[in-house]
Length: 251
Image 1 (cartoon, rainbow, N blue to C red):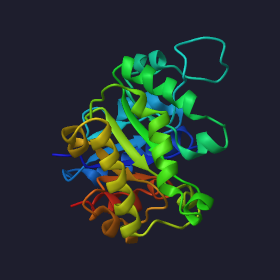
Image 2 (image 1 turned 30 degrees about the vertical axis):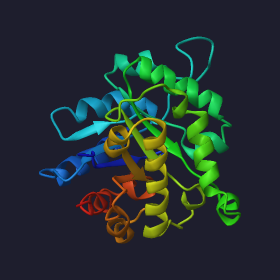
Image 3 (image 1 turned 90 degrees about the vertical axis):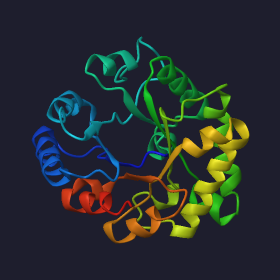
Image 4 (image 1 turned 90 degrees about the horizontal axis):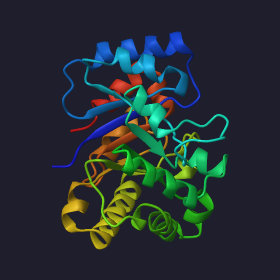
């Protein structure tokens, strides 16, 4: 049975007090929720405090990024070992903002994936096409290239340690969102590619979540699609009431 996951990516928002307050609100309002797994991804300075606060709750803490090197002269980077030292072993890799703004290419992302696999991390791998690619009917080739250049370089994967987050770049922070049929079509395409590359068993057990301006009023229709296993939530995760409504949309 595939895991159902909803993760809140707070990006560069919330100071320490705001982060702790938001976590308190999510904890209080998520008690008894068993329909999916919950993740929160605060900024790097607050990961340890967040991890401590979420102990003995149903909430897991997720890092927003990780370095492609084990250690070295990389000012501002954070390594797998650093994350492990504060008991963080789940990380987002390849978010579109890292790809586009910080120019992280597939070679860099593959190195990150390989390091995370070596360290037994859980990986949330983001893939997605921009508006120009979709308007040119190239969205499927873009997704296939992103898979071929990164995760498909591995000989094998553990579907319990990998979550694919399909996030159409044109729907991130724009207020636009893929409609349910668009989301399902792409999620099914991704699942079939994993079946061909690895195995039917891996494909069937792989969690694929949707990210791209998910809102409380749109979440249920997207999550009801057979190949959509949850969501990577950006702006709506910054308000606990909206986030919890989205979480409860999963059936």
